[in-house]
Length: 144
Image (cartoon, rainbow, N blue to C red):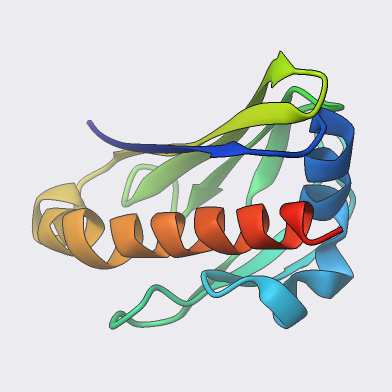
């Protein structure tokens, strides 16, 4: 198993950051990493997600929502082709630091047979994608 975890402090309420994260149709306007999400942010539902890591190959997959706790946590589990081949449990967690400040922890745990072949790409392209998305989310939330 391998985990990538990033975090960023955002000067906005948890409610505002959550609203931006859940506004899937707007992702193409601001999100440099997760280019689109279709579906409902409800536990048990299936999403259609397209990611484009900086310098990496785009990928589409259909994860299942594991957790959708408003203003706290959004988590899904996705598979590449078949479960066990290359799996990723993606998570956004919000921690209120004050009335108008929140810490976003953006992480993913990876596992599966293909993990050794993809590990280097995860450390570079995927981590850069997480960080770029975090910064873009911060900019959007703090802009107004």
